[in-house]
Image (cartoon, rainbow over all chains, first blue to last red; front, side, top):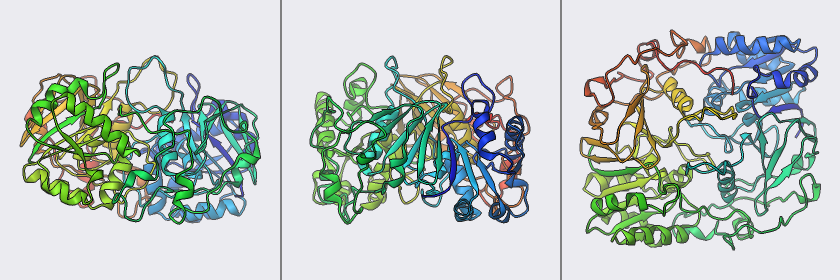
Length: 303
Length: 303
């Protein structure tokens, strides 16, 4: 992992103007640089560019939207700073794929361009789209994203409402389902929080986050926490695949040894670098990963 | 469209046992038939089959899980009734794709097998996965689903909470984003509701739903509404594609003529058959579809 990144959970805090909550952080992160805006997560690129341009101007920053450039790829190659706006992450990813901009952005960031994003823009910085909250309104050609960090982020992370009568999965349950299938840490970034990544250093800012790891109870992370150990993880996707799945006995892989969550957290507290687990492979070594006891029990059949 | 379908929004109503709210409907729908259960939306197939088997037994029905069969495809080909359980719809679809069961189920239903499902099982009955609420925890080989009905359903449909401080997209906004990209009706099935489909006849049962159509204000549908006009729609996906998108001027396609929702609903009330719009194509005729005024305005840049 390398690069200078600013990854926001959300663009707008409740009751505040667009990006106002992060104005100082944006001003410091992009200081003196012209920012190239990627608006493809929303349908109305002109309107979106106007709104974000005004928000950046309030932070003393110049912003230009890539959709107005006759050659977006060339503009991104030459960019010294990029801002990828929120919206629908499936729509955004498909646009980047179609214009062949994923590699372009990745190369630019490796070459020193600063990358910032919010919500869908933060999803793009992860290895895959697999922890987005968005509806899959269009079909991208695969879920691989930029991979600027080796772990997954869930933007707009929200705790379960104990008073809710809605029976859809909680956010926590959705992430637990992700961890049934994948061995990759997921940082649930609460609204108002962001990550500042500088090479191998990862720091949580302004608000709290919840960290989910396969085989462990989830952990609370305070603002200011050093999460640099996350830059060293080796993500393991599809660790529960069998070549002949679902024939035979497909349920053997992901079945946890216990249905109940451990009463006490079995791990070191959030931010301890020794706690990063890795997996040696995906399909090659499913048993090692899949038979480990996990705090992520099966869903109650309430869906 | 053909077949006998029972499509539930959810498996469990708040405070009730699994499938208890639909027990009588299940008993009537499957009367006298052995039901083959498809458990692949959850990781723990054995546990899921036990729970659903008990719920079906309470309705006087016999249920057998396809995951215990040495040849799931043969079992589905021979089935007289199928129940597809809820869980993660991406995981479910990938399992069906890998075992090549989509065509098998489609053929069985066309041949008279009764198809029932809840949540992810209801998503499967639609043309695509594009209106699921689930996290894309695994990557299916495409979003095409069974297409037993020609319109989209959003299970667990939930109205926006006016008191919420959370800034993630509301369900309504997510469906509006779907309609920016696709010209397919979306029926938001509130929890506790279900659809009974019998050939061309589609009826809403027990609870209300909200119907979303491109270019129209959304409409409320009462329990008991005849929605058979939905069986005649011609779904138009990706109606905003340009071959060279996003170069040039990618925002021209989906830009609505007005940002504000019309004050009065411009359409006939929910259930009127004459209101089904069709599109003549996708890539071939984007301008006709895309330049139409729409009630689904662009997102505010609040994501």
